[in-house]
Image (cartoon, rainbow, N blue to C red):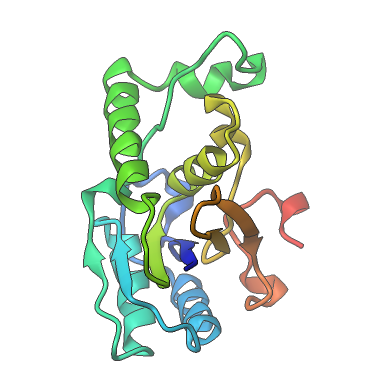
Length: 200
């Protein structure tokens, strides 16, 4: 039986451009979440989890308001994090990014994502539809994981705010990337969180 995992990046955070670590959704972020909820409305979700950070919690609340049978739960495994550190094969273009990251952050993020993969990517015998509302780097790591790509590739796998990524595993088969960063539910003016060249 197939296990479907729906990965969603939170809506746009208010004043995110000022470098705030967390905060409420912007009005645009709330609208993104509302449109995403409409997109997901016909899916028979069995479970939903979200990052405990405010921007992800509010996104989960907006989605749940349109799906009364859904009760998202916070999970520390979905916190924003740095999933891995630089490796010999990591392109030099990412040196500046890692220059502001501590070893402690890398160690914590690596441990978190190992536990997250063990929890959310484990095999199930029943047909399941699970929703994870989380962050850009976390989704990039999940996609990298199911594709068995080098550890550093999460850096190059980006999601827009309230973009939809779907992973599926059928019994006895490896995980499959069904869709990545689907934005069909968002009009152009609501597509945020990516460089402009990726917003179409």
